[in-house]
Amino acid sequence: MDIFEKSVAFAIKAHEGQTRKKEGIPFILHPCEAAAIAATLTNDRETLAAVMLHDTVEDTDVTIEDIRREFGERVAFLVDSETESACEGVPKEDSWKARKTESLERLRSTADEAVKIMWLSDKLSNIRSFFRLRLREGDRLFENFHQKDPRQQEWYYRTIAELLKDFSGTQAYLEYTYLIGVVFDIKDMNL
Image (cartoon, rainbow, N blue to C red; front, side):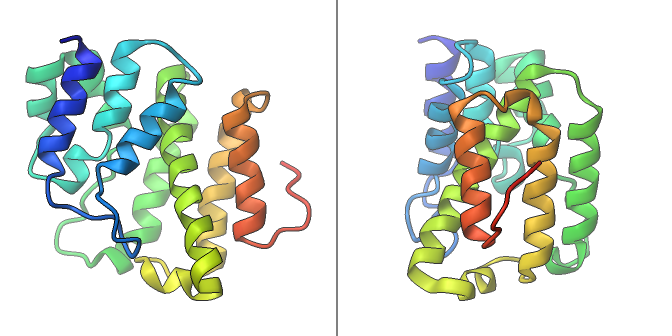
């Protein structure tokens, strides 16, 4: 079993029983979709493993040390690069802007292509989910999230698109920016 296959088994176990917000689908489908997106951008097995594991530290009992022990320093670094601070004791609704701003600063400061691939893969999977919810629920879709203001959500997703312009020639980036336009009803997605 190579590192990517091992990460799939590990993520399935870590996310066992979890479902995706409001969609009600097994949570594990999100990291699987993100890994499939990443595979269109790289064939690096450590990057693909990190994408598969990207939510384990944030959304399960798995620690970054567990990732380091099981998958090595590079995969742990990549997973940690997209893991948000917990802001202990502060409700997620109240810490949303601070957590997102801090995460965006880490993305802004990296030159590591694998980190950027992780971000694009994860956020494209997320915006696809937003799109499905928008079709089903219209503007009420934002009631499902910690940040209910669509303007703040738009700010976050557009900023990510601006920071990932290096990928502007890829299908993943083109789909990402297209879906931002659709979800947030933006007539002209000039970045």
